[in-house]
Length: 427
Image (cartoon, rainbow, N blue to C red; front, top):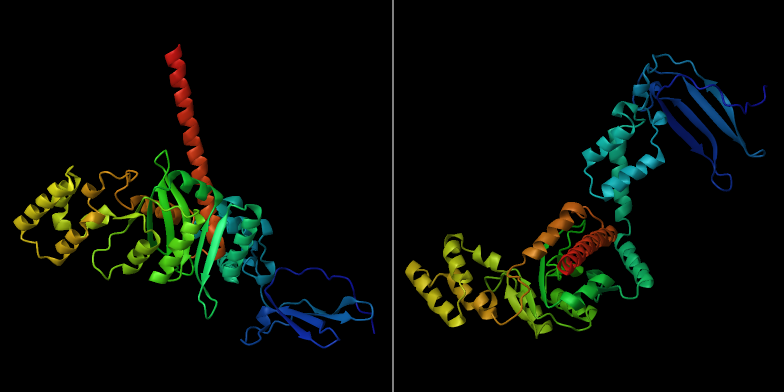
């Protein structure tokens, strides 16, 4: 009997194949032989019965694998074109660097089709790929599964590491007492806390956007800096919009900013008593020294028919007594004094009519549009509904760094203009 061959036989013309193996206990449950056969041979599905078959065995004493049987004569036509071999499992080839490039593009919000187009350019066309678009979809799905595995713990670990590197980073977690399941998460970076110290007199707050894989509402505290640019003082993911969650959120944020309450907080207008009592109750308890204003834009759009007349009345520089007289005249003339919406607007007039805030600094804010525009920035360029929790803050941090970069550029330009002005005046 001829001795077993340890030399790799010549590679045949590319052909489809299937793999199989047998595992036998050798103390460590290692494989003792492996087989590879042509996929056209038929296994579960009868095909053409191709006899191509390769079998390798393991020599335990020498620690080597050797070819025990080789049959290379196919009984069917092989694939004539290299373009077709990429559909064969054994001939698929995607460089590891390309996988990294694709994953980076997906992390940064590049659409699937745009990512495919970029990869096609890198390969000089799709026909040069050693893989298929379905392979890329599978890679994407696998990456999503990896991102969601132990998602929350990875987010908390990210916070712990960040705290170790920067003692001024603040984060806290609220969990259900009985189960220990995390309900709410709040965090604020050192630069955000510093900006609140300088510009935290007026803030807007809302929880209308759900931009993550867990569909948890994103709550943000947003204001304006000295350049009237949007700044975010802190953000949170909340499990529910109950009074308990809002109260924990506001108390934690107040602790984050060393107990300093804002002078004014603007929220989306709550017209009826059952629309958002949880948030209102929590604000009254926690921010007891803060003036609560309602978003004027949402208020005016409650009744579009009165929008134009309301705009004139609201924007006209009246005092409280003058406003009340003009309001009564308007609703009586329209015959809507007893309408539930109008009555609700009247009862809450001190929360959204500027006549009652004339002696108060509000940072030129009468609505939550700053908050909504900030949400739009996040959704358009950084996060979406499939963003995992542990990637959420990383993307938010990218947005924060971008805003800091742009604001620094604006400050530099303003200083340059001032120096140029002084130079011209002195010359």
